[in-house]
Length: 357
Ligand SMILES: *Cc1c(COP(=O)(O)O)cnc(C)c1O
Image (cartoon, rainbow, N blue to C red; front, top):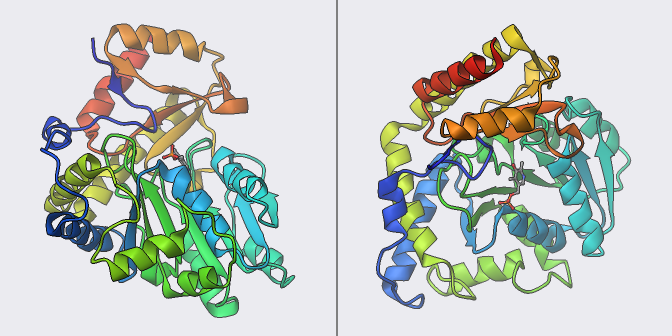
């Protein structure tokens, strides 16, 4: 039996979207391929409220995260971390010999503009990374406020944001917020199969990359950018055209639903799950910054999350255990992508039934 996924990626993919992956191949050096990239770009620009160039990478989101840090750090990077994915960005810097420092808060708390201000006031950093939606803790960071601070006080700092588990599930205004590299991947709120990463890139990030000598090869953001510019929206290496067909189609579906409607649906689901979590358990993250695409529930009843998931599996559902050190201490319910409130209610009723709540 297929288990309906309520995990924070991969998520359920609509059948008609899946079918687009089976579109007959096209040459990646054809006008059709150029048009496909242009169409996707135009739609992604709407989704991200930006005029910046959109670039795809046949990798998961981590690929472009690594590429951004390596390609755009001239001097030293500051990684603001509120959980496992924030830490990952720091590990990428270390692994690529990029000078960096990590500023991690206690899990369950956000990165605040005050913290960023304090760190940047040292003048040591020319790039920062922030996780918009930290999937390991269920925190949604105030990226807009941090962006405002950067615009006002640190206009030369390159602002990289991980929106892997929030893009298409929460409003992200790239230009308004001043995000230089905004990164996501397909298998979360965009509701596509895993395998493609997407980013927007600003002029400032491009200019920064031009000053960096060793940007790697496959994930060199400057190379990707210049290729798109010079070769009519094509890529240096062969992209996953099946993903591109599916993405182009799914973006039509998303725009048809209406961005505001889509974000409102996510908020409605989040509010419902949070209320449920508070009724039976507790929220793990500080509520003011709780995510709108997944809820991390503190396991105050000491249930076996693994056992709950086994029982849910028999009923055709799957949720996520706590991430890393939070295993069995929390459990996570994703409410992103094409998931509806009705499906969320059905899941929660089954959890209540299994646990006798
Ligand atoms: C899933 C996730 C990632 C990793 O993305 P991949 O596409 O698996 O590489 C990074 N950051 C966050 C916040 C995520 O949720």
